Image 1 (cartoon, rainbow, N blue to C red):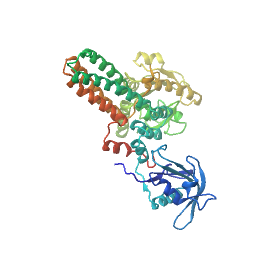
Image 2 (cartoon, rainbow, N blue to C red):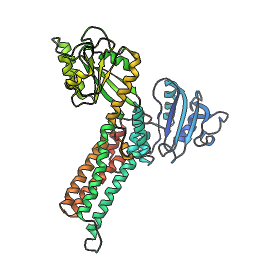
Image 3 (cartoon, one colour):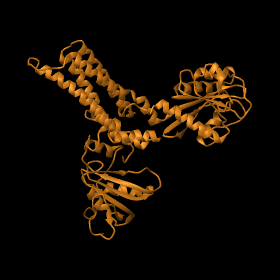
Image 4 (cartoon, rainbow, N blue to C red):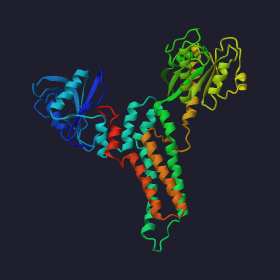
Length: 468
C-alpha cells in the first residue's frame, strides 16, 4: 500500500567509497533537509530557501539536537512532480564512509523520515506515473547488468521500447474489441461490420506479433544472465588450460596427471558485448574411481544444461572411445570444437573428427600459446552472436524480454487470442469472442502495470536493493 510519508535510504552501495548519496522522498523531504543541512555561509537560513532546484550547494550536515557537524557535503532538491519519484526529493552527497552514511540516515529518521523498503523509491515512481511497470523493472536490470548486451537491453526497456511495443499490441487488441462491441450493440443497424473471417485474420496478425515478443525471452535471458558454456573433453585434452587462458588467471589446476579436475569449476568472462559463463569439467572417460565418476556425471549434467559446448580434442593423441563420447555430447548442439595442442606432432586431423560425426566449427589451437587467445575469443564471440541472433529483421525483433512475468503475461495473451480466433472461425456470437479478446488486453496491460494487484507489486519490488 502507498503511504504518503517521507522515506530515506542510502542510494549508493554499502562499503567505503569516495562519495555516498542519502536520498529523501516525500512531502517532508525539504523540511527534514532543513533540519539537518546548513549551506555554507548561511547558517541561519533554512536550506529550502537557499537551495535552488536541481542545483548542488555546499554545506554541513549537522545534528539539530547538539549542533555538532557530521560532515561537509553537497545537497540538492528536486521539487515534485519533476523528480525521480514524482514527489519532493532531496539528496545529500556526503563522504563515502559507512559510519557517516549511517549517521546521516539516523538524523533524517530522527527528524521524521521512515527507512525505505527495498525498491520503494522506484515503486513510488511507478505509482506516481513517472514510469510504467516494465520501465521500473528495467531499473533493477540495469543495476544487475553483467555485460554490454544486458545493459543495452535494459536501457532500451527503461527508455520505453518494450512498453511502446506492448502498447501498440494492446491498442490492436482494443480495436478488435471495439469492432465486436459495435456488433453486439448495433447488430440491427445498417452498419458495415467486419465479417468473422476478417476478425479472425486480424487476430491472426496480432498473434504473430505477440508470438515474436514472447519468443524473444530465450534471447533476452541469454543477454541478461550470460551464455552458459561447458568445456568437455577427455582427460588432459587441455580444458583447464583453456579456461585459464580465457580468464587470464590460474583459476583451474593444470597438471600432467589425468583426472585432476574432479568437479565443475565456474567463472565468467566478457567477450565483446556478451557475458560468457564458463564451466570447466572433469574429463569424459570410463573410471573405476568413485569420486571421478561423480565428477563425470556432473560433467554430463553441465553439458546437458549448457547453452553451448566447447569440445576439446587432443590432436597429439589418437582418437579414443572418450572422444567418441564427446562427439555424441555435441550432437545438434551449438558450440565450438577445439583441436588442441597443435604445437605438438599431429596424431589426428579435423577431417577425422568430421568422419566421426562432429558437426561443430573446428579451431586448430594451442592452449599454451597466449598469442592465440584473441583468435579463440573471436570465434567464441561469433558462436555466441549466432546463438543470441542480434541481426534481427526489424526494430520489433530487437526488443527482447528477460523476465518470466513478461513471458507469462504474453503466453496468457497468446492463449486468449488463439481461443478468440477459433471462436471467430467457428462463427460464435461476438460476446464469446469478446471475452477472450478482453482477457488478452488484460494480460498485455499487466506488463506495463495498467492492470496490476498489490501482490504483484510486492513480488516485483521486494528484489530491489535498498535506495532504489
